[in-house]
Length: 254
Image (cartoon, rainbow, N blue to C red; front, side, top):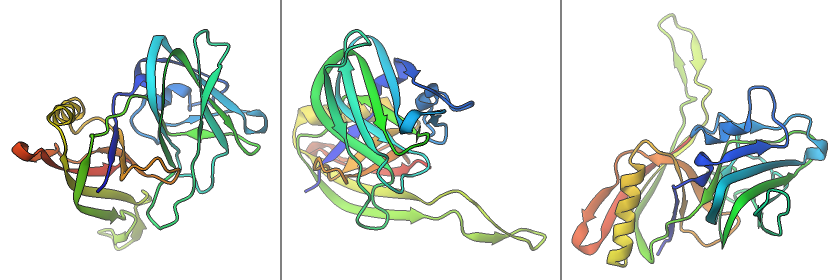
């Protein structure tokens, strides 16, 4: 049995972002860009500390958080926490966010995903304490998650695509595409209830094939979750609607 966790309705996209600092060309608003290559980078951070204030304009419920670095993190990016408050000054509650390196090749690529106790506040603040130097972030999610009540994974298949293979031009010169490797996941499953089936279809309608989202495969609330940020390669299929069966293909963002 596997548990799929989908994070797709990102409150960050409609919020006002205020960063403690930002390097030229790498503002905090880059985090609203679906491409993680458009990242936020701090400038002159003291001992690697950085904050990002997220103002929703009014109280919003947050019970899921995800973030992914760019380039992929090779080591834990320091101490991270998401804080919550109502006036943009005092943050009385927080959740710690932890990332660990994958234990197997092709595992988690610099991504954190977590379900948290629901918070309902106008302000969220991401606080980072890292090694001395500046810090960068590719994409951040704050909002709610969709997790089917129970689903059985079927036919899980993972393909690693390596576009950096050497090829030869017409003139005979060798060259390499410098884009990094990425993964394509193909999986199917069965959702337990009619209500959850309706929610699954609502997610598919909202996301389609153009909107990026975070997906955790076999979610267990472990720091080393197998989490990908990307989008559906093609519109997810409804295999057998009478039995709530589905399947989809997911392509990891680069």
